[in-house]
Length: 122
Image (cartoon, rainbow, N blue to C red; front, side):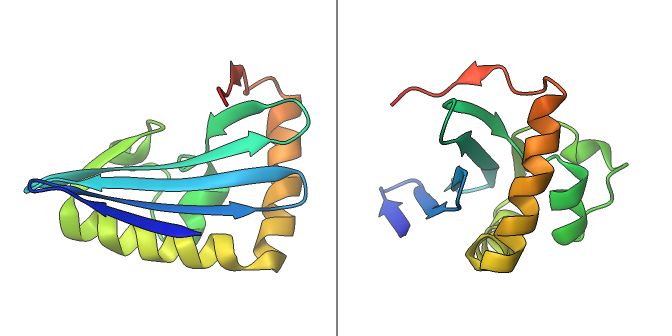
């Protein structure tokens, strides 16, 4: 499901999809100059969540060098056009069911290593 919300100064783009074990939420808010960008993953069983856009797998699929310090944090502030482009790429990735299966296996391993501590609010 994709949602676009407009106001006079900015707009939000949100894409939500469901895998077998995880829900995913892609989000960007564009202002006149820059945008935030994040991908949230929520484990359906434990309700633990994590921002995953800085995982090496996601960085690689988005064509981003994992050593680029601009992308080290779990939420990014980018020029509007860069955020729009990444939103489209990430939406396409998260719409690919084969990729989602692979991503969910990757996330299971990441979660087992204790990287997921946040419980998502409903």
